[in-house]
Length: 305
Ligand SMILES: Nc1ncnc2c1ncn2[C@@H]1O[C@H](COP(=O)(O)OP(=O)(O)O)[C@@H](O)[C@H]1O
Ligand SMILES: [Mg+2]
Image 1 (cartoon, rainbow, N blue to C red):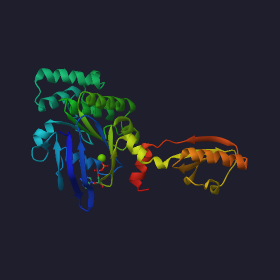
Image 2 (spheres, rainbow, N blue to C red):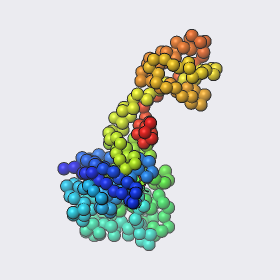
Image 3 (cartoon, helix red, strand yellow):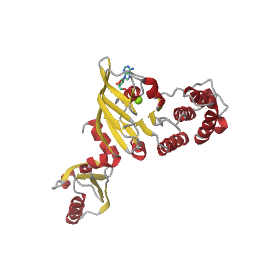
Image 4 (tube, protein in one colour):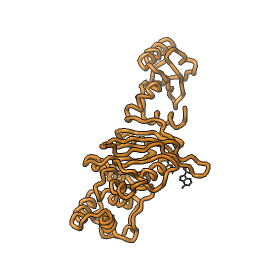
């Protein structure tokens, strides 16, 4: 059974098509990322997956349960961090976790044991008796994740869990996501941070303008754009664009004091550039070949280059 199965989701707000025919199938076990720029439709998808927003069309199943037909059962299988966390400011850190645990029907002993364990994991032990209203944004987000994982949900859904956090909170959130995944939770998170998606996710869907434009492992997505590899070179004296016109070179850009020579065959391009330098008595000051990056895939897919 798949952890999340969404079919042909669609949502419009007036004239805006926020989500346009999005389907995803997430098998159990991985960390899956929704990567896209602001306004791409990530939050709208998450809200439909978690039963907060009713889609105009399409359906969602969480571990086999239809979210719109049986929302309560579906919600018990999920832990959710919405885009704007929903913690109770007038309760203490510990009370927030205990009350959430109670909502999920955990007995008193396991509520207390679990709260202690999670407070420690998220670096909140010393502040457990303080009101959340006195907390920084990073600490609030840690409470938010604490509440989302208190019942050890098989599916954990997080909307931009690290956006705007301090370095320490960010690391604790990421460590907790990894820990929950190791313990068996399937994770779906959204991010606009490419490096984070690269470091954390086993599979990524790149989302743009309400649609999924590519899906694959980070490495696979990078390879899709292998043709955009380049050789970066600088000489001891200025040279012109026309120098780089040769078979196998697709385009050339000046890049600071260097040139980026795009090619689908870096080996051939390097040899050509060396012979060029020899011929024109140029000294090569620096030369390097690029590896395709996820950023490149992302930019190309979301800017329609
Ligand atoms: N409640 C809403 N009312 C009107 N427009 C909305 C609403 N929610 C989202 N949108 C619009 O839908 C699009 C997608 O938004 P969102 O899902 O929040 O994107 P993301 O999370 O990727 O930044 C945007 O154009 C946004 O302005
Ligand atoms: Mg969003």
